[in-house]
Amino acid sequence: MDGYDKYAYEPFAVTADLAVFTLRAGALHVLLVERGEEPYAGRWALPGGFVRPDESAETAARRELGEETGLTDVSGLHLEQLRTYSEPGRDPRMRVVSVAFAALLPDAPEAHGGSDATQARWTPYESARELAFDHDRILADARERVGAKLEYTCLATAFCPPEFTLGELQQVYETVWGAELDRPNFRRKVLATPGFVETVPGAARLTGGRGKPAALYRAGTAAALHPPLLRPTPEGPPA
Image (cartoon, rainbow, N blue to C red):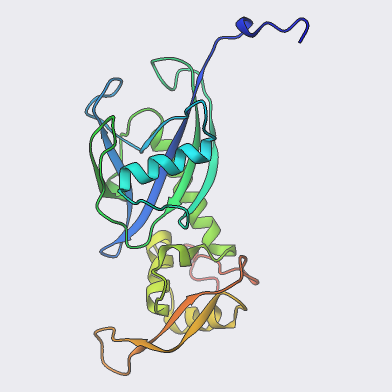
């Protein structure tokens, strides 16, 4: 183009960073990597890396997700763009713009450190603090996004295995929200919401308690919850 000078602007890099959540031992966990290189060598950070010239940000995010988890196929996992972080000085090397993503893994495998990470591990969310760069902020934003979306979408089923009990689904809500829900009320709301879950015919699972085995369900065809399933407030549950 006439009059356009590409050298008039300082070049910058783009990264894809991931806040990857899973449930382990009844607690919300996040995937962290220990940085093996400067800056912040030895500090824990969210997994991620630079977007290659032939990649989109989402392609780079899926590649990084596979490298850090060891999963060979991440196409079916829930991955959504969170927001873009572009404040000057967020990376001491150069101007770096990060496109951040939130990902959910059911039955997450053991973590594997990628090329620039010393090790990777699943860490309880409440213990994930003082991360490198601005990753504390990214992680907090991702947790809030996931918690909010549980209210009006069927996202909770992405934390569950292909077949799950209503008790396991309730545990997702309680773990992410950090609140205890009334079991009969939760069950009634879930089953009254068209397309939220579908019964697996003839399937049941022993839950370790007394009584008959619990029925198994799978994710339904709905994407949104009508009406929403609102999280409890400090004053008490909404319903």
